[in-house]
Structures are given as structure tokens and as C-alpha cells.
Image (tube, rainbow, N blue to C red; front, top):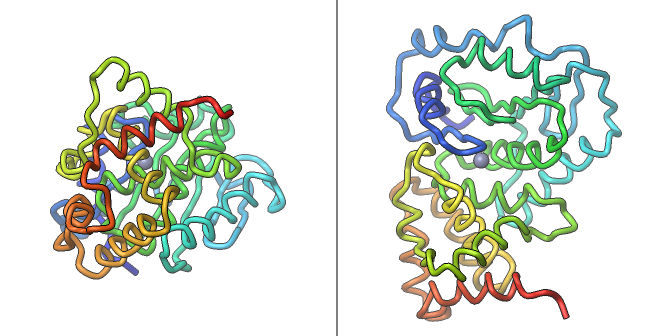
Amino acid sequence: MPNRAPFLAALLAIAAAGCARVVVAPTWSSLNGAAVAAVAPWARSADLPSRSEVAAGQLLIHADFPLAVQHRLVRELETLRIDVSQTLGLPVSDEPVHLYLFDNTKRYDAFVSRHFPAFPHRRAFFIETDTTLAVFAAWQERVAEDLRHETTHGYVHAVMPGIPLWLDEGIAEFFEVPRSEQGVHAAHVAHLAGRLIEGTWQPDLGRLEAITSAGAFTQDHYAEAWCWTHWLLRTTAERRRLLQDHLTDVRREGPAALPLSLRLRHDPAMPADLAGALRAHVESLARPAE
Ligand SMILES: [Zn+2]
């Protein structure tokens, strides 16, 4: 099992986060076990969803309500495990990812404010501790999108706890859209196309890589992280392979791995004008289909 991020560091990081979904990177300074245990009382809490429990591949789903193993969303999240693995060239893991599903926002909010009082309000979140990968979410209108996003974090972190923040979020945004969209995130396309028209966006992967705090990640960063990820995975086989090779290096070498921006710059098969290539990618996606 990979070495998990300390829980208190997780709390602090989430408290500072300004984004809709938060992942706890495993690179924060460590704490002793006592401190971790002292701040993780939720693990045995009586107010965790427990009415039904469904095992679906790597997922262990604990819900407030009866949930059929054949539920469309359960099947979809199970399929996502293979999609993530095959698309990214990552192995699958058997390490459980716990999904805690609350039957309404009120109960979810009460749970979060009791156990995670420092958290800003979020519809769902993923957390990684020394021993656990867990997702918490309320059953609401956008639960499918939220669970695809957070469960992707779970699948990726099970095999790659050291993934850089920008890529972690770029991948989760890529997989949060329904499978039929092939990773095209219409809201991000519209957002970035608007920024291009305004002249307020210049793609810069090095700038994204330099952000290591989830709290500093803005909506612009989520959109750009998604865009680099989509450009790498969905334009040419060479670019997809380059991303897969980078992921393999990060798994092996951790933070010492060559940043993706440098790998792109040093590869003669990649465009010399990377920012221009990314702008053109947004423009092609924003153009109505003919
Ligand atoms: Zn996320």
C-alpha cells in the first residue's frame, strides 16, 4: 500500500482550498500516528452512511439508502476504473476506495461540519490518509459528475500517490464528463475560448506545474489543466504515449521525475510553439461541428 498523506496536513490543505474538489497530495510534511488518529474520528463514526454497502470492483460504497449493485452509476464508476487504467497506461490496484454517499445535502453538510469543521463548503471531496482512500458526497443533481471526478482521484492515487497536482486535477476533469463525451469538457472549452477572445489567457504548463497547493488552484487552472490533459490524450498517439511515459516516470521517481513541460520541450516530435498548439486545440473544440 502506498505511503499515505498525513491526515492533519490533509485538513489544513483542504481548509485552504478554493476549488470545488480537493485532493490531498501525499507530499506534505509528516505527522506522528497519534496526531493522525486524534484528528480522524470520522473513520468509526456512527453518522457515516451505512444503510447499504455495495462492493463494485475496487469500490466499497456505503450509502444512506438502498443502492443496487446494478445501479447505472455504480456500473459506470466500475467501468471508469478500466477506462482510467487503459487511457493512462496505469496498472489497476485492488486497494479499496471507499465512497460514502449521504442521501441529502443537509445530512452531508452536517457530517462535514461535525468532522471537518475547517472545510469550506463543497459538494463532494476525496481524501487520502495514511491508510485510506475515501470519497464523501451527497446524492444531489450533480452527483454523477462529482463521483466520476472524485473516484478518478481514488483510482489514480491507489497506484500513483505522488501525482503532481495539476495533472491529478486535469485527469479528474477529463474523466468527470460522461463517457460519451470522450473527455471533452464543454464548460472548460467555453471558458477558455472566452479567455482567448478577451486576450486574458496564455497557456503555460510550467506555470501550472509550479502550483503545489490545492488552495491556489483557480477555475482558470482547472480549465487549463484539463486542456493540456485532453490535448495530450486525444490528439495524437505520440502525445498520449508521452503522457503515459511521464506517468510511469513519476510512479518510479516521484518528484525527481522530469516535469512534463520539459519533456514536451525536449521532444522533437512535439510542436515548438506549445502555447500556440493549445490555443488552436481550444479553438478547434469551440468551433461548431460542420
Ligand atoms: Zn479534484
